[in-house]
Structure formats: C-alpha cells, structure tokens
Length: 318
Image: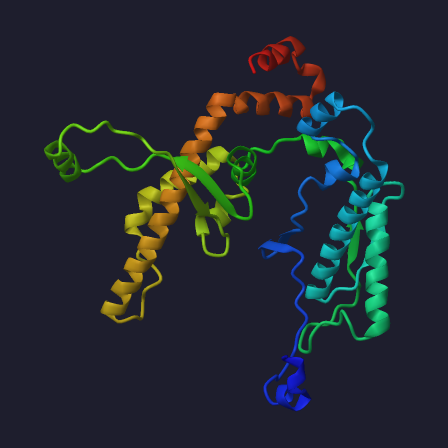
C-alpha cells in the first residue's frame, strides 16, 4: 500500500536515505564485539558438556550436513559483522589470515563482499568529506584462537577482567543478586501492630551499567590491577566531599545545582563500584584466585621454580 502512493508522494517527504550496518556491538570507542557466542566451539566442533552427554547415550553419529551448515552460518555471521564494521568506519583494509584455520574462510568471504560492494559502488569505503586523508590502508589480521593457546589460558588480575570472569560482565552490564534493604523502624512498628509476621528474604537481581564514557572511575580503573582499583576507590570516596572544582565562572545558584547533580551521579557511581568490589573480593577469597594468579605468574616467568606438589595441593582443594 505504501509503494502504491507513487514516487511523487515520497519525493516530497524523504530528504535522504542512509545504509546503517548494525551487525556488531560497539562497547567502547575503540572496542566492539560481534556477539557470536560459542563461535570457537562451533568452528572447532567441540560439543558442549550437555550435548556430549546426550550424544553418548543416544545411538548413531551426529549429522555431518548439519555441522557443515552450522560452520557456514558462523563463518557468514563473523564475515558479515566485520564487513559492517569496515563499512561503518569507511575502511578498505588489506586482509591477512592464517591458512588452514577457521580464519581463512572468514577472510575469503569478507574479501568477496568488499569486492562486490566496490564493483557496485567504486566510491564505497571512502571517508566522508572533511576527514583527514590517510596515506596507507589499514591492515586487518584475522587469526584463529589456536594460534596462541597460552593467551586463552592466561588470567589477568585487572578490575575489568575479573568483572568479566567472576561477575559475568556482558555488554557493559553486571547483574548481582542482592537482598532487599532492611526495614525501617516505622515499617517494623507497623508490622508489629498487625501481629507477628514471619520475615521472608527475597533475593532480587540488580543490573548495573558500566560505561567508560560517563563513568570516570570505571574509565580510569578498569585496566588497573584489582588491588590498585580498590585503593583508588577508597581514596575517591574519602575525597569526594571536598571536590568542588570545575564550577568557576557560574552563578551561585547554577553552580550549586550543577554541583548537587554531579555529586549525586558520582555518588551513585561510586556506590556501584563499592558493591562490585565487595562482591569481587568475596569471590576471590572463596575461590582462592589470588593464590592461583601467583602460581600462574610464576609458571610464566620462571617455570622451573614452581613447586608442582604445591600446585596439585592447591588444585585438589577445588
């Protein structure tokens, strides 16, 4: 019905059309993800524990055709996602990939998409007018994770990595299970008037956003070692009430309003990090992650100095 209105109808109402590529997720100004979970397991045909258990009980072998179709689907999603990133950034890179790995078909499919786009529009991937010219084309290296297995096994101790490993940081959000706040004296008195009621603690899930563009503490401490982040948090909480800078040249009323708004936002942000740090500290203590990290560091720096008996004792406790 909309097409039947004719070209004259739309020409008077549409000023411009744009292609928007949305097959990727931008987490930070210089960090993106394609959101392809378990792509490594699919491309390397590693069954999940639940599927492996069910397959061992069920007769017959898995369908090879389904495996090939799934591989092509994952490869297509990765290649399409990278194409959308390049198209959004107006980049026409030189592509390099390791032969004989899953990276090779991704690179081939990506190259074909770029060539098809250039054949249809020779001006594609050019930076917009006014952008600084670049004398060199960027280099895009597509590598399989198997190219460097120790990187996959290494565990960093910075604030952001621990939040990812221990708190399930996903898409710049962390969800924690928390108990509701304790009842006030008035609520307790009202409960007493209505008789004795058995208290039932209800655990609720609370999601906290972590955005480096608006959260200054997260931007400054996400890459810091966890002990340093804890120390910086304590110092920031101590000096928060004394921070009144950045308000010079404003009227007194405007300055007071901006100061109160900024103080309230920073207070909520620091309270969020206080909860995250407390939760992380509990997980680290419960799982003895600090001891595992020390052993891992010694194995990387001086493998001959590691006491294997001590490592086995540490592993046997978990």
